[in-house]
Length: 216
Image 1: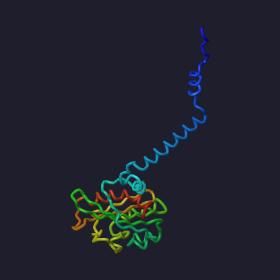
Image 2: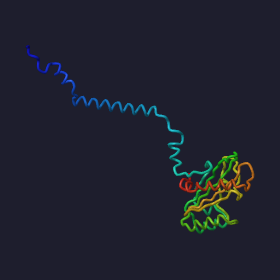
Image 3: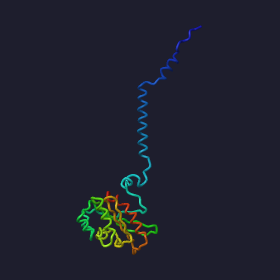
Image 4: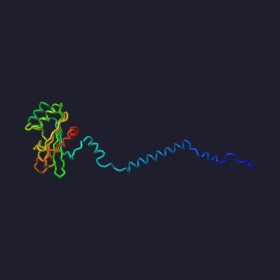
């Protein structure tokens, strides 16, 4: 019987081609990396845009409280001296008890029936809690004066704003050293004691802490 070849050529060649050399593994790794980079670039190019108000807008409004009305800030300032922008006994109070920080702002909002409302929000940060309590009590009494809102102060307005001279929409609050004073009026008609103006102002007072930290 003829001798059979031991470990024929076909077997030998098959065994040598089945293994992957270190150089081969390196080439595969480089190819996978290249595919990953290209895929990432394609995703950046075709990914959908974020909905409006979910990136920069949400960052800018971080910490802004939720309110029952949509308040849009129209005018604001940050005076250096509370006494110079106040009247009556409240001005005298500030002369002896200077405030640390004062902000004044005007907001507009719209009621469910379509009527527009103007709201003033004034924040006063006092050095001590007891002074803040005294100020808030004084602000709620009659004939004690007040801190001038921007309409009363005669600021240039972008449109005809109603005066804030009635008490129908007046409200105030005090939290620790911060006092927030608000007042609202209707656009285009006389104010009335229907409870809606007071409701708007009470909601606007929630903006006080945010306004004090973000006056601009």
